[in-house]
Length: 112
Image 1 (cartoon, rainbow, N blue to C red):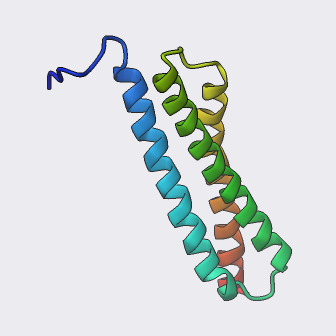
Image 2 (image 1 turned 90 degrees about the vertical axis):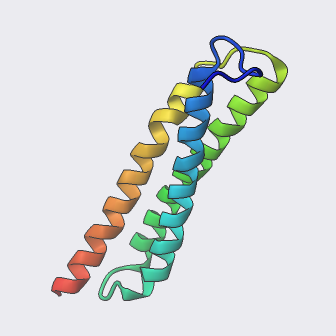
């Protein structure tokens, strides 16, 4: 896998870009899934479902924003800043929390 256009030291950036790109897609699919199943949550507050949607939405935004930071850094020729690590760690954490919130509500509605 020797690419003539590849520059030295950019393999990590490319892998991080792909990771964040796929994480953004996963967040958006999760957001659509939660929105589609939101009416199945019986006996629970709509505010809790909206909170789960907001948390997953923030995860999607942070991974998309981090992807943009990588593109901007590569386009301008500057190194990645330290902010990228915050978004790289926050996005999967927020996605997990948001999905956990919704799954808790969904399972509780099935047992009630």
